[in-house]
Amino acid sequence: MVTLTGGVLFAADHMDSSTIGRFITLSIDTLLTVGAGTDFRDYEEFLANALDLINLLRARGAPVSGHYLSVARFQAGIANGAALRREFIEQAVATSRTGDEEATALLTLAKYLIDVSDYDGARSALLRCSVAMREVDEAHLRVDHATTLGMTYYFSEPAISRAHFESAVTIGRNHSTDRRVRQPLAMALHYLGRLSADGGEPADAIRLLCEAEALSDDYLTGHGYFHQRLAEVLVDHGPLWEAEYHLRAAERTFAIVGEASSGLHVLHGTWARWFVRTGDLQSAVDTLRAAVQRSRRHGAPRVELVLLAEMLRVQLKRRRIDAATLIMVRAGIVYLRSESIRGPAQFVRQALTVFQRAVRMLRTPRIVGTAGSEDRSLPIQCPCGADHDPSAVTD
Image 1 (cartoon, rainbow, N blue to C red):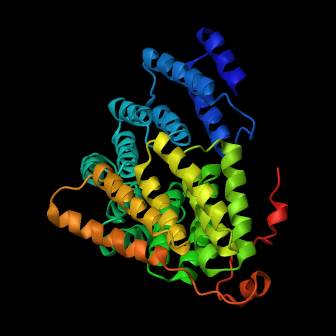
Image 2: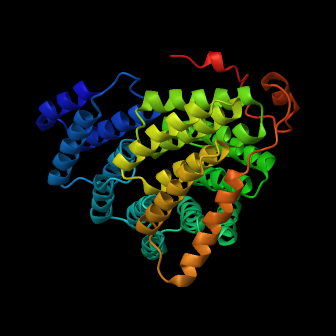
């Protein structure tokens, strides 16, 4: 693909704009769907070539808003919260020509702002999106809007969040023949699954996650997140080997697609929880330390908070009160610096929600017996259909 994008740049004067546009879409979709492989290191060169082609089309007066969103999605796998990703999205907003294009770009901007914890900014973008949607009445936009609005409340007001996700599911299921509805519907189901997990309902969580996976698009990163989220539930409530299978599947999927951002860091936190289940606390600590450092380098404060919560659980299990105290201080500083909170009422609501989730995370499931026997006594069995043989996930 790097060679082809360079070749298209060389021959662009002899190609029409629609052909170049189709090639940009095909090349980015191919890398996001198939992945470049675990040894590929030329993502920056590919992205530079794609941007050169987009700039060429823009100079010709061709539509480019959707192409900017494609490179933004590609950039998200490299650095989810990077300013460069936002720049691509804002270019998509600026170059949109129809209400559909503008609404889609603003929905993407809202998702970016959620990723960097600017929930008020995300809701402002969604308000602008509502105005753009007056020109179009498309089910996929309405489902996506309700889902994204629910995401803005996920960390502060779970009841409001759930209501928006359920609204998205209702709209989506009433328009299930529209293929464009499937991905935002899958995202709503995914978050309902996470809310079920947060509420101590692992069986419902795992069922909703599997339903979401059946509807999701073909992009590999999404499949990686599916395995990672299943592992999060199974590592506390399911058979140990099933959790390991999904951890390895997520790790393999992220490697193929070149994911180096938030998903990979959170996965390492789940691996640490798996090490705790096996009794290997030192490996858990080593894994978390490395993951925390990477999340700081990538500017991912929300992920760092998740990892610090995992580290706190391990250090408390090791009875390292001094280390646990330092972790809580660091987490407080990261939280206050990173979360975009307006007013004391919102601060109290969000802090309470985060505290409740942290308490649930810190509770260790009561597991008895040996590593071989206790797994089969646990009530939650994964319904995804895989044989769950960890050794089957290989290079």
